[in-house]
Image (tube, rainbow, N blue to C red):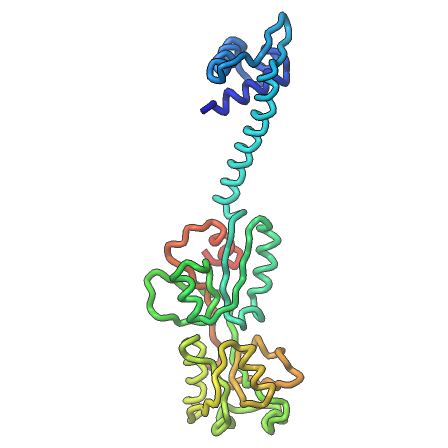
Length: 293
């Protein structure tokens, strides 16, 4: 293997065509430079430099080595730059999974800002339920989850607060309650509900159930749907009513009417979920962009 320093010295001699000028360019004295070129020729096994009285030239082999040496030095510099960029979190890949409602809150703003500030980082986005995100994180399929806590105890996962949302009642536009300016939770007793499955998001499901129990009834669930867009689409076709995140209140609003849940407990949180052993500078940069550490 040839030392990169020898290649740099050879390129300087070849470009300056003069040992003294090359030595000055390299901030060294001429005798060590002359000795270095001889050592390089010994390693290669052929003459590279034609010595003259004042100037030098290159043999045919030297001309080939000059082209390859420049290419090698350029690639070495690129490798170092790429390594430093990765170590600083300015390049690499971040795989983010998110619950559907997160795209109606802070997440889009964070994604746009991070893509502008870290254009060399590949940001992969994937919608998934809170339960699916935990499985994907455990398997190493994603780096960051944006989900609704709590999650089952998992020592290798940690949560960091990210965003907040609230609950609203979603009604078909033709529903009698849609004509009212406000709707109480008690008014929903006996209504047919489209529900979010507990197995796919225990935090959101239990939050909705608490509102119903506090109002004195258990919801009559006629259908479950995996995904808030699916829940609201079923509301739009008059399958039933639902309680959904307020951030989604604009979805299909020509067919769905939204009314706030009137409760002191109507708000809930969204959190980042990451592995405790994460060692990806780009992930730390993404989290830092959101104000997390």
